[in-house]
Image 1 (tube, rainbow, N blue to C red):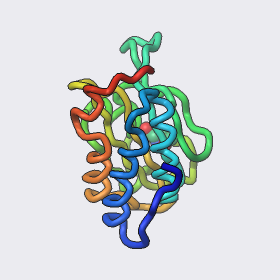
Image 2 (cartoon, rainbow, N blue to C red):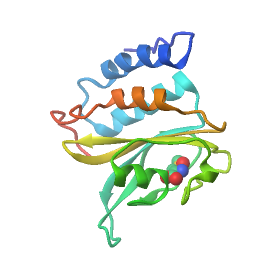
Image 3 (cartoon, rainbow, N blue to C red):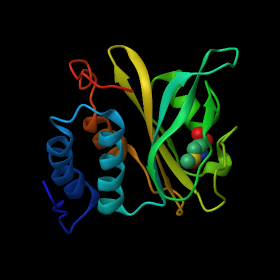
Image 4 (cartoon, rainbow, N blue to C red):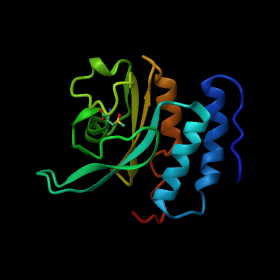
Length: 169
Ligand code: SME
């Protein structure tokens, strides 16, 4: 696949078109970082949000033994490590659910990687029953994300998606 086809229309139409294209894009490639890099690029091309990227659960010398570590992304530089339960990303990891934030300033403990970021969505990604990564998207506008984004971004990597996938970290 050389080029994404992105329809003109609302975000539901865009999600419905790009999700199968993204699945085709990563199918057959086992390198997780290569796949996450292309997914971040595809979402950036489709929606143009300020920051789109992945944090991956990795061993860390902290008390919990693991942190989210910055993975492939599109956008300005970002914080590299996020503790379990901290910020929007650490909350999505701990609570194992998508977190939609209308206004980041109203989210207790939000980690501000950039003052331009106004709203955010973080979707946990599972391997078996474990969260092994999160997808984080930030917007410069308030309230850019809602249940529609949660629904379709969860369809990108539904539970079970990575279970039979032989990826290397
Ligand atoms: N705002 C996130 C941190 C990551 S950056 O936005 C890229 C959080 O509160 O977890």
